[in-house]
Length: 254
Length: 272
Image (tube, rainbow over all chains, first blue to last red; front, side, top):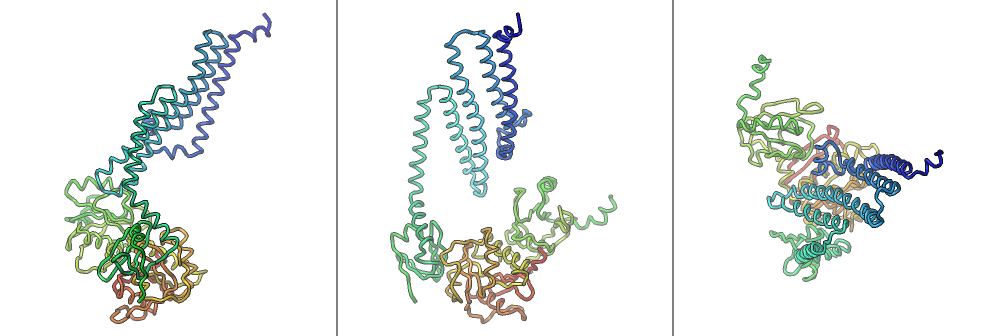
């Protein structure tokens, strides 16, 4: 048996592919780690529960993601090697695996990223609401987190081919509910801010002008996007900009 | 070291509360257990970084210790955290870095400068007044191209101030939406400080106008003799309206604040 024949032996080629896969997988993992670190990911995920549990396991988010990409390459190499070595010789199995593996990889990636994004969103909303000293407000960050997680799990499940129709319907009902309630609750704010933009751009009246809106008259003290503050001798009116348009503006001259 | 305790122990013997000025997180944690032993701990600082309660906010990082302590205690009195006559141990930093000094102070409810009142009980937001102070101090430090400049900012009650003043020329802030906290403002105001007249700033910090000639009724304004027309105008407008005024003096470079016609605060920009 000469060298040529030896090199064409399936087991040898399979071993070579496997070795190449290990090297490439390791390099991809390292490259990913460097790129993620350079992109400032460690700072971005700092303080999230996911990162903290990763830390307690002696690793970090960046490492997990990098390892994931390495394992993906290892997996492909291993499967290719198995195919070349013809250990399992069923085309059907082969077709399933090639389709399924990338999907599984994406699903895991979506889960990892999703968990971090959800944790981060919870932290940010919590930070934003900290100035509101209302105990019930602490519920909102958790609602945001679990809403995001729900979407993430939905995407991951859909990715690996689980039937998610029922969950999808639930999501649509949930988000439609939020949109409708939100639109209803913020209707006045939307109208007022539209008028506020006009008032700020065109300035039909400015601070210091004497105006009358409806039956309230006085000196303009402040104009912002939602309200106009008008002050008379002993009363201060906070007038929603919506009403400014409804009632019209009367400028008073001395 | 017991000997030292005998000598300095009387500084912190029988105090009603411990007042910490801008403590670091670890410092606060070390002190916090004392609270369980019945000692009140009050934190004073520009920002509540340690999440302490009770907390008194400082509007400026006062470099003079006496002023810092006085403002902190005035704020604590005003918020009802301490009472007049309470004896307090004030721990603060005199040199750079962490807390290095403890002084024993008796809170005095009568002798109030109205400092706390100026920032927290004015019409305009405390943040706005703080920002105006910073702009004035910055302007005082650097001047305009090395030459000292003067400036007058009238903050709050802008509608009434506008009605008690007239324009000297076209208003450069007409139809603009510039607020004092914005990063570009210091540079912008430095350029405009060459113009004569006052800056008018609204309760929420919007710069309403520059170039205003103030026309308040000046009778009954009692400000120290020797201050110029700019200070007189500042004192008078705050008496006539609910605004406060921050003045940067061109001649001696001091920043002074007026409220209700009275001089409340005087700081040297060089010291910050």
